[in-house]
Length: 405
Image 1: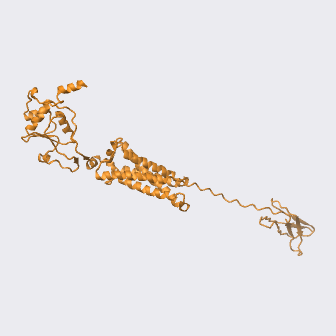
Image 2: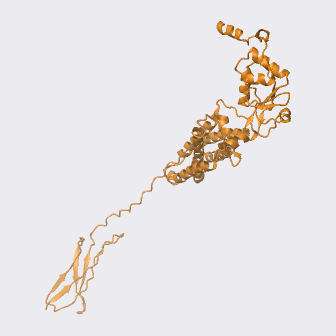
Image 3: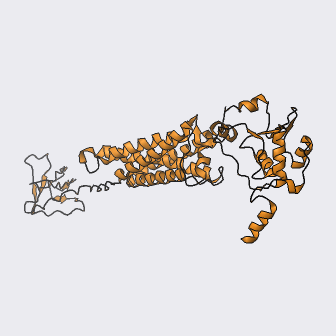
């Protein structure tokens, strides 16, 4: 009889501690027992077995069992599973926040000084002429409050923030708070940089290149603070905070461009204050102009004017320095918005400058030549030899002085 044994093998080689045995259980069908032909299908994985045993079962109806022993194989050492490597933490930046606090404090003092002078109507001390131009322009106020007052508040906030952050540097327990302080410094100084950028544009373009020392100093402080704030963020923080800082900068510039407008006529009138200062007459008087001035005074003619009036100054230039013009100043104490004219000018109902009023009440507005004034008042020039001569003011003495130089 022929017995065909069909063996189906499932081989597993677990590499667990202390076990190195592989068993193959096969099911076989029994046929006429003339011969036994074991067929073993083993996977491509190699087995180092010491023996293969075929044992027939006592029951004729059961299939034999096949066992493969791997008793002599050595147990290899277990290789540990590699652990994922953790990226090293970026070094924590250490920006000079104390320096930033002192810079912001200097900006606070400067802005406070400008705000006080603006509110009280005073004049700032400035080595250049552009300071007062910038401070009196329509761009110097926002909602009726000096722009420098907003700057003082912003500098104070940055000074407090950076001083607080500097106290946490190097403290591991306050590492997260220190990171927030550095990021907030970066964002707040981006806003200061935006303000200074727009104000520099105003100085250069709308104000015609006005040289304002305080404005330039404030811009230098703002950009220095921004540089310190930028140095306080590492690569990871910068990737998160940069879009927000850029947005703060752009929104600040656009907001100022909309809110700050130059209503120069109204702003200048409201803030302008002129102390009294008599104009300097450059022309030299002559014997004729001095005698005509004396004649006008004797007949009761008067010239009403204002020290800030350019036409009044031109009228005085016709007479020249040294001529005693019968002049009435309508703003002897200076001028600012709301200042009334002098009582003499109010009584004479002066509407413009200069205004000549004769003794008989005739009123003539505007500049008048010496010949017109002589004709209006009936002045006749006397003999030139009889005219009084002031030392150094007649033509001959001026000529001698010129030739002697």
